[in-house]
Image (tube, rainbow, N blue to C red):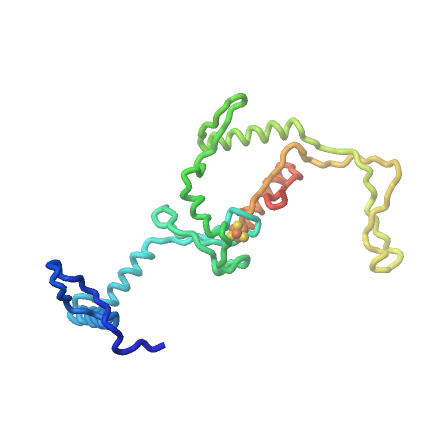
Amino acid sequence: MDEPQDAPAQSLSKSPADGSGTSGPTFSRRDLLKLTFSGGAGLALDGFLDVSAVRAATKDLKLSDVSEFTTSCNFCSCGCGMIAAVRNGKLLTMEGDYDHIVNRGSLCVKGISMFSTHTSPNRLTTPRYRAPGSDHWEDISWDDAIDRVAKKIRKTRDETWIAAEKVNAPDLVVDDATGDRIQSAPRFVPQADVDKEVPVNRTDAIGFMGGAQNTNEECYLFQKAARLLGLPYVEHQARL
Ligand code: SF4
C-alpha cells in the first residue's frame, strides 16, 4: 500500500531545553531515509567509503582461517549430518549439512542445540575413574584409560574364552539329482543324536556398543575389532 506523500511529519527532534515550546526542524521517516542514502552515496563518492572494499573485508573477516568439518548429531539414531566451522582449533558454529542424505540441512530442536553440549561447563573432557569402594570419580589420562580397558578386555576374554562347542550340527547337503532349482538348493538335513564339536572362538562376557554419532567407516572398524576379539554381542545405542 502506498504511503501518503505528505504524511504528517513525525518529529525526530527534542523540544528545546529552555522550555520555550519552539520546536526545531522536523523530519519524516521518508526524509530520514533520503538523508541516509544520499549521505552514504556522498561518502562513497568522496572516497570516504569504498563499499566493495568494505564488503570484501567483511567477507574475509567472517571466513578467513575457518575450516569446515562434517560430523553427525550425537543425540538420536537418525544420524543427521552437521557441518562444524573451526578456526584455530576452536569450534565456532554447527549447522545442518545441506548435502547430507539423511537430513538435507535440517535439524530438530535437539540437533540445533548441539553446540551447547560443546560449550557446556558440565561437559566431560577427560576419562574418569571411580575405584572400587570409592565415593568419588577422579580424572585420568587417555593413556591410563586405554591401558585399563585393554587389560580388562584381555583378562575377561582369557577367563571366559570358548574355543569349541558341541552342537547338533546338521550336514549341509546339495541334492543335484533332481535338477530342480529350488529342490537342489543347499539345505540342512537334521541328524538325530549326533553331537559334533565345532570351533566357535568367542567370549560371551563382553559386549560392544556403538552409537548414532559413529560414521559408517567407524562402524566398519568397530565390527572388525569386535569380531577379531571374538565378541558376538555387537549392539547399537538406538536398539536399547
Ligand atoms: S538432529 Fe534431531 S533427529 Fe537428527 S540426529 Fe539429531 S536429535 Fe536426531
